Image (cartoon, rainbow, N blue to C red; front, top):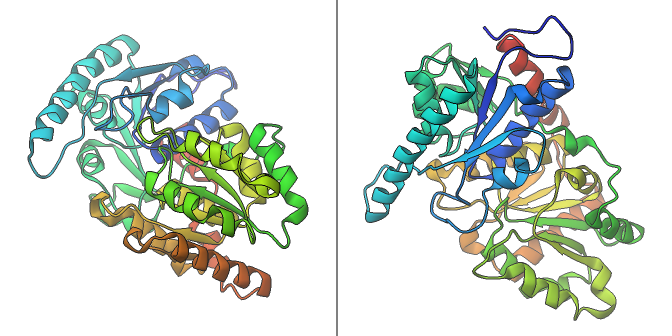
Length: 396
């Protein structure tokens, strides 16, 4: 069992936290780190975050989500090689398998040098080599599963993990009986801080006077952005801004240059300019102010996004990624639908006109107060003390 220090501020245990490839895995890791540092403020050097070098398992240009989140913080960070295991074989599988083997070699070096007392994984392809090497070295492993469905990496890691923590009760069935515990998600504390002074917050403050008649809509394609969603927003921008104010998070796609194109579009909006704000990413420092003030969310249905919308009870138009394994985003989205605050717009039906109609319907429901939000169910599912429950369960 991990060991607490004799002093209140210091943790004697050395912890490797691993996970990445998407904003959801990284947000959950951030939530756990926030909780550890709040309880043991002098323990940052006892934590090592092991993430990936790749933007995704197939994209090599740019920095990974976890690199951007932790590389310039005071939490020690190391990036290793990685590759995603696939159920079907193709030529691409060969390079991905080599990535996994590269990650295993890197993990032996990292774990051998840092000598952690345990490993905590939030999933994603980069976590697999770290956890496999940890298992070979007999280091205790703990796993957190964010989604309503479980991918191949977490199914493998779940077999060697000492304990598995899940965001949604539906996920318990994927693991050995008695191993999984429902704790809820690991919430980053930044979503509750609403006193930001950044550029996004400044743009939102300019929108607030018209908020009652022009709802603020936050559109996001997830941590990496979505070219498909960005195009649709661009197509409907000029007429949608007659009824809404829009904040669009594009991601940083070096190939399509969506952010740069939309910045140019914004400059042509004239007196509608202040009703539209475009950004590549939303920082941890500004996310709380954003969530507090938006009226509608539009975008992907990653587990963390769905969970955070559930906490704040924000009406959501969810566009699940159709190619995700086990249809996990659709299952995540369905949870908000069942709670009465979500509607699903399949990507195959996504057009500027279809999205605009959904937004107008949602605006009407907000103004007429006809939402059938099940507030008790929302409070029961979207708990905010998941990180505390996890630390208690692992003896911290």
